[in-house]
Length: 294
Image 1 (cartoon, one colour):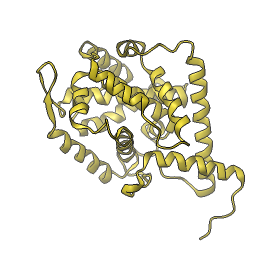
Image 2 (image 1 turned 90 degrees about the horizontal axis):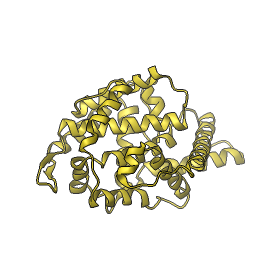
Image 3 (image 1 turned 45 degrees about the vertical axis):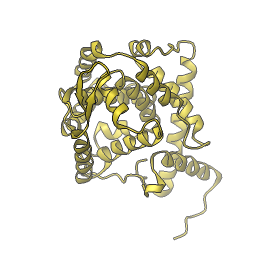
Image 4 (image 1 turned 180 degrees about the vertical axis):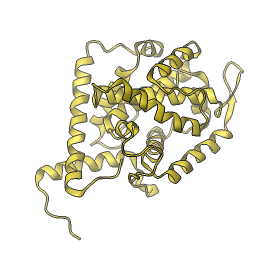
């Protein structure tokens, strides 16, 4: 059936939404946006659906989370030894985003299959750190570090650019919900409140460090080319906001500048971007019904 005529406003909203969807789905692989299912791991009333459904909060949180994760030498080694990040950084980030979308919004069977695939891959991977210490990607404590830094960063991205007044109870509920997925991935220990998450991060801080490999991966993350000219401004803004979202101690370890003077511009620009993208998807939703997640 032919699509009804659309005015300039809806046409603009559709164009913006298409560009965002294209950022997260590889057409060469026939990927399409994940259709939201109410019978998944969390469900429509969950905090995870709310947090993970915001494009800008997730992009900003994703950058911040990656920069936090790579401060752990064994987590960095897993990426360095077993990832094609040098040649396909965008593809790696897109696969991570798709995994989050499937496990958050897909049906329970689909989410479980995705988690089982990741656990199987992790079970075969390991190596030796530059110090000579062996590591396994499936180490529960390493998985816990990846889990807590992702959750911490995604939640903080949402609070800053989506829901500044989010209640402490809902923040705790988010960690409790995400602990379900963390357990399925084999992570341990798992925080179930924001306070427990902060304590776990603080406990892991003595193990964190930066070397030449850390600096190279960080450089590739922060200098990756945009997937298209249309998305270049979005990427530039979210990369800056991701660095700004980092805790001060993490920026210091990385040797990244503290953006005190630029902070108001970064936050205002990113908030404007977030509002524009929500406006775009709201218009498409009003015209076409509930859209799939990107």
